[in-house]
Length: 197
Image (cartoon, rainbow, N blue to C red):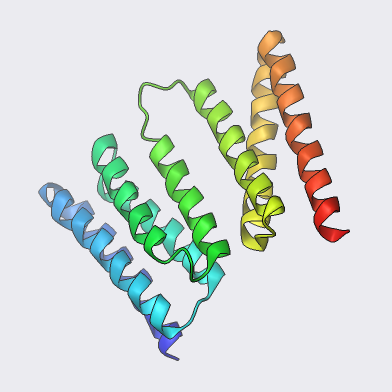
């Protein structure tokens, strides 16, 4: 019961903070700090009431989205807020490596999207590389949640990358993209075979 109340209260508070940010335009810094602070309290409560990995990942993603909504198109505060959330997660890394590793990768992805100077094509390449590398880490260290989350995200990002590179203008980059995707898929298959053997 305590765990359900913790998740419910955490998500409701995030929703309220996002709503307030929509009507109090100058309060983004205060609301951003409150968002990170509530996330820190959630982690403390999560550590005390039991370790639900899927719940932690969902709350982390929800709070990252909340942070992005509060600091709408303000890249530096989003980057800093995400970084602090990542540091808070690292504190509990030994408690539940699977969920915390997955959450940390989501934080990293959120930090990457703040790189305004990066083109959408380069961002797509980065997404494929990061999600593919995360999936491989999941396979290598038998982290079930990491493996599932980032295999799916890798598949989606790889699909869009190949769509963009192959059909837009088939060039050397298209060949590199195809080879990279094949390499990641083969590596995942071999690691999965090694773990199940």
